[in-house]
Image (tube, rainbow, N blue to C red):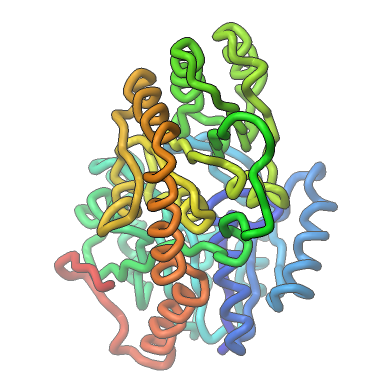
Length: 395
């Protein structure tokens, strides 16, 4: 079928939704579908990177990319969101999705491209995925409930990446929601092979995430200082970037751990290598809808210590290995990291268990087949339209 994948987030912009869109689109193209990603034009500094990413997407993964409007970063929900704007944006979106059998809209809380696609789609089946954790009673849902409810009623299927998304959505937008998780590339994210060895030196702790309040890197830096003061040998790899970078580097220096921290920036190509070389993945994030970084760690065969939040509880459950700590509690995080670093047998067991779960439940071919089956249930079938009913989920 001809699929238009509409999103505010696509490469070269890094993040969970961009990863989701790239891998799902590539897998669907590999299954024989004609996939076009419709997304915003990035600012001038990223235009050449976007052109390169679009070429690689077509040549390596088999899906096309259409850029519309202009994409801007705006603060939202404790993060930096992307919003597209520009004269004639509605027409550009309409032209980009015309002829599609199915329009799949990713990130339905974004205010422009997703909602324009909902409004402009004519004959296509409509599927939407909600990726964002919203607190119950979120002001945006309350303020725009009526117009959003009218638009969302056009969807043939609503997907959430985890049950953690539900409490913020269903009071305002009741209906059926299919739970289909994020996926992970288990070929890229893998453990060290028998011929590979970790780098020389102390065991490595890895952090991956944008430098924004909800990812809470300061708590990890404070915990690292506690570990160092107690004599635990370690090194900390930090993958990510953002406006607070200089303040965070200064904080590490003030804590006396500057020599223990390596700042890698918003790394993409080399990120998987850092995962498999790490002993522990530390995720102090306080707000999450799911936890793609946890999947990457599990697939890479490394232990996980993470803050207890609703999204992460959708991953570290049902036998998935990992240890929760209280959010924003450096002492608790330091104790957990110390315990896991000091228990090689535990790390080895978690490595095997996490890798097996990632392959069986979250590998992208597995997830893409679930999405394809959902598509097949709605294309050409009016029976798929959920309407306004009691909120339910379907795995």
